[in-house]
Image (cartoon, rainbow, N blue to C red; front, side):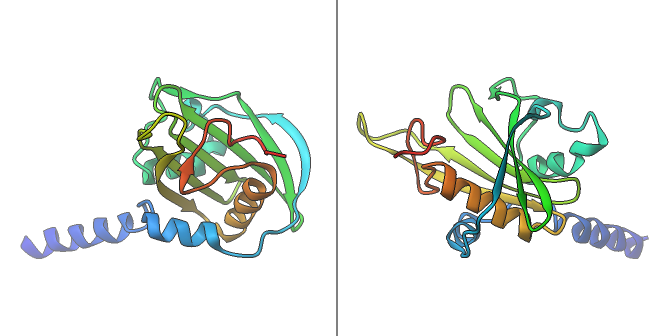
Length: 177
């Protein structure tokens, strides 16, 4: 009987190894990776809200990301426009989605298609002084053959926003000129 319990425990452990968020250090390594590639922006499209993830089969890979990050899709703090940037890279279409907590300013960015997904989540620490940027605690999650999704998300954020994965600044979702 003990052997059966041990085998069940090992199976659960092996199956759950893939369902964890990466460490902040590992996520910063991803963020700092090259290359930043040219992606074709194809416009804004309507997409599923984070609180609706799991209601359709097409959002299962994104729901897994939330699970890895220990985030709940039903949290009433989530805010989103319901729009995604549709981009093309290497003959594949991806969607870039952003949602945030309305009070905490914590944010998630997800690059996904039907098979693969990669995300960053920035937990914002309180600013020490008025007007200063706030430090962030970074985590990330991946699903499927995520490497291309990671390249797409990094390239999109670095080319089209002022986002910094070390600090939060109000409005950094938009590109500063």
